[in-house]
Amino acid sequence: MIDKSAVIHPSAKIAEDAIIGPNVVIGENVTIGSKTRVIANAYIEFAEIGERCTISPFATIGSEPQDLGYKGEPTKVVIGDDTIIKENVTIHRGAACGDFTTRVGNKCLLMVGSHVAHNCVLEDQVILANLVTLGGHVHVGFGAFVGGMSVFHQNIRIGKMAIISGFSAARQDILPYSKGEGRPPIPRGLNVVALKRRGFSQEDRTIAYDAFKLLISDEYNTSQAIEKIRKELPVNQLVEDMIEFIQTSKRGVTLKSHKTGHQSLESEE
Image 1 (spheres, rainbow, N blue to C red):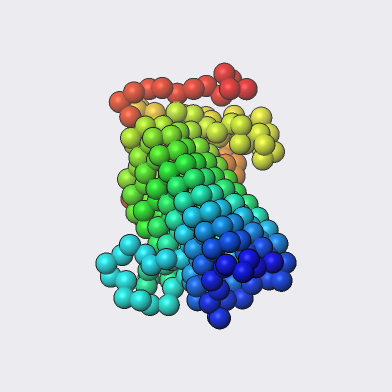
Image 2: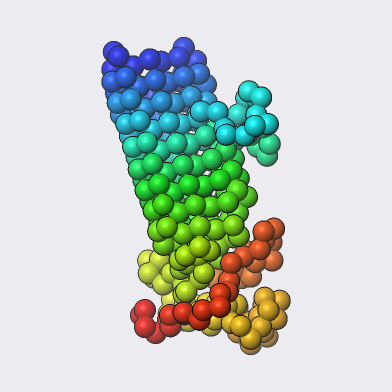
């Protein structure tokens, strides 16, 4: 159903069972999948949107990137299935680099006023709370949760299933599975709740926490910590993910602070 007040570009491809509300503007090169709802006053252009998504009032998807080098090249936004975009969210299409695309995965939730800049990648089941701001080329891993009013420098990575508290800011990568807070968000523990929900065993969580303690320890630099982990711990997939993430980082990973505020796994169990 398309409301008669909606403005639809002739090039747009809209599923027959999609719902397009009053005063929606859908510009050129837009595809909207089955059962997706675009609620009143949203604006979309140069975007591919999957099935069963919800686009809330005054969301803006696919407008030009805030990149002074952008000269109108044919770029786009791609959004997966079952994703919810709340009021006043902005998702800019890609700049003319990489694959020319900004990507948001399946079953993501972008809360009120959050911003996804050009060429960002959000993997599946990412949650951005209110007013989160991602600079260009930020990569957010599967199942990560980012607290409200947090700000992230361009080109950083937020690891899978990391959880970051509100009002944080980062210029370096965020370790997978970690809980971080502050400016920068120093890791204080593992996201045990998420690990439990994803079915990781007590044994796997304990091994991961032992590796985590070595990575944030003031006794070792990062290379020494990784060497000690490989020698002394039965490395599992969680640990391999953390090590691989650190070793492939281009901006460095926030691991340590002058404070010691770890939380023990036992206290969270």
